[in-house]
Image (cartoon, rainbow, N blue to C red; front, top):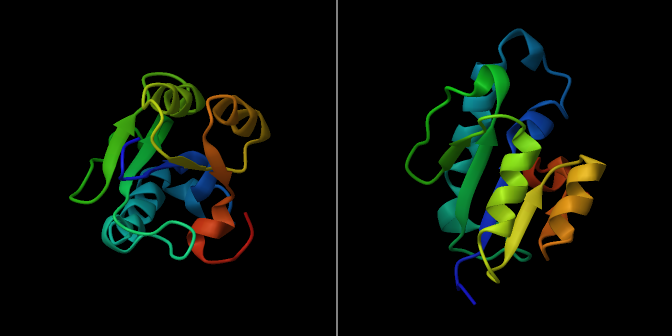
Length: 129
């Protein structure tokens, strides 16, 4: 098993979970989310997800051009962001995979491949999973 866990963040779902005006600038909101994720590669989310962590942000639509930065790999979905998340989970073998989304259908799809799922509040500090 790969020792470094993979944290896959469904950007559209996490950005959309907070009514903070993100709809006026989807790309900007996604870039801000990306920037909050940078430190997770080194610090993880203890105690549940200890470091180091490989962080992947899946973007789609108006946020498709948001680039990756050191500490956060950005995957730009050619079509559906959900399909890109599932492809990432399916293509990573048996390493630990944690997907952050509140999308019920996506939750079912990735858990079928053995991934764990957490809700946006787990990631953004509001508690819950």
